[in-house]
Length: 390
Image (tube, rainbow, N blue to C red; front, top):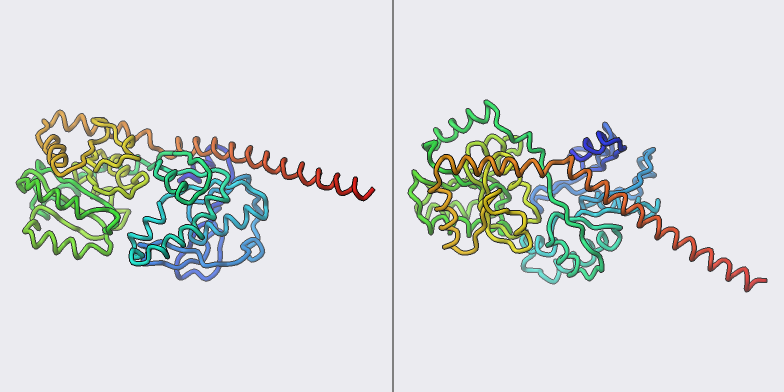
């Protein structure tokens, strides 16, 4: 989507990304270079570019960028660093995850020293070589500080194409179909979480809190959408507590189908503290869902009370916040929906693209200054050498 926005603003763009597992050769299609890749199931469907050495020699491209923006560290990022170094091009690096914590959650928790070393030796290369680092959360600054990299992170909000989540006749009809399938009245409020079903999402606490509230099933139910390593354990937990009729773990659903599922719901909720700026939450907001989220201090400015959501800390806070929206009149709930839809318009890709272009211009200026200093230093060394020679 950013490519489209940049082009509409008059810029030339080349995207380098990972192709399918079946792909054997690098190919260029409509301004997008697809590099052969593999799927790492342990990294929850991350596609990693297969190392291909010097991409420019193996796959010559007549494209001289003014800026390289790295959004993916796994293979693709290596290509970006390689080209930037050889061509003296400034790099903007967007950090999406605190990788030292992420590696812990995905299964390296028994090898914490190993995971720290991976983070230090691999991921630090990107932050050290970046002209400017951006992220969606101030959490990134703490991560960069832990890497002992002396750079300031520019925080830029995530974006969604909110128009893709607006109501359609199909989505309105699906709301009725979904609720009929599960025996849910339209007046029953559905709270939904969408995301990876793993420890980092803290879904167990979300379920515990919902069970603690023990809302009547005709008043409120919880829906969890997504796949992951904790799915079966959480299903067993819900069943053992007798909450199958109030908590539904639907499993993975194709992302193209998510908009219609969101329109079958009433509120978005999450207990995750691992997010930078949750895209799932923003997509839910673009669908008109008010967000009820666990308070996350570095991200607390992402939720504006009464505008796009409420925050909670403890079980009692959770119960109070959920009870608050459950006891609202239809007019009050309609106002919340109106507020969150209005808020979502501020998280569009065009606005993000315009902000990123300003960052690119700054990175180019910094790089030009650094290159000028290096040239001046070389000329000074050469002058001293000639002086000694004479």
